[in-house]
Length: 212
Image 1 (cartoon, helix red, strand yellow):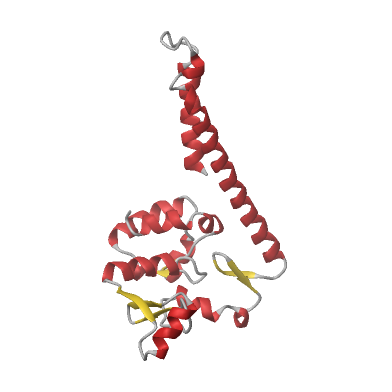
Image 2 (cartoon, rainbow, N blue to C red; image 1 turned 90 degrees about the vertical axis):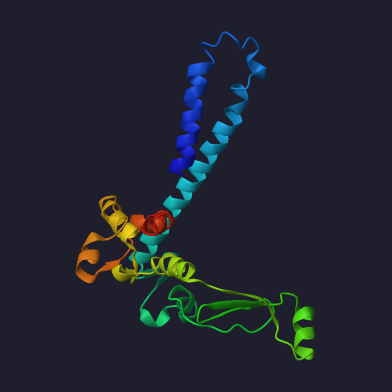
């Protein structure tokens, strides 16, 4: 929301400065400047919507916490370890899985593939004795590192400091100072764990940790 509101404020400030004093814009209804009023209000609306979603998240977190739930992933809460989604944790922790059925995705040892999406095409491949896989990709070291940071930072256990590259470690001081990363946890356990505020800005934290 901050970025959109900043753009909106810059546009509106320019309009306020420009329109009252311009000698060249005799017909303001057709001016290039005035036609950007819509863009300013559009960016404002996007910013307000994003802010409202953030407030809704904080409200949900407060209500769930008061009801005895603990967060274990940015968008997941549970009462006790036994209720955690082991299926999803396989994705977040970079595990191996083999998907069955049309459109199913699989990942084993850095190789990711996905089956034909349409049931008829999937069945035809099987009937012909062929693999149902439609395509595959092999993740290189940089891609695997990026996904490790992107997914593990979303979990309550966070990301091991050993997995953070030097550029990301430099950024950690600022992330702690901004209240996005739990500084005490970082010092005690050498793990990068998001604060409540950090969960709202997880993408920003990831970009900083990856040095983007």
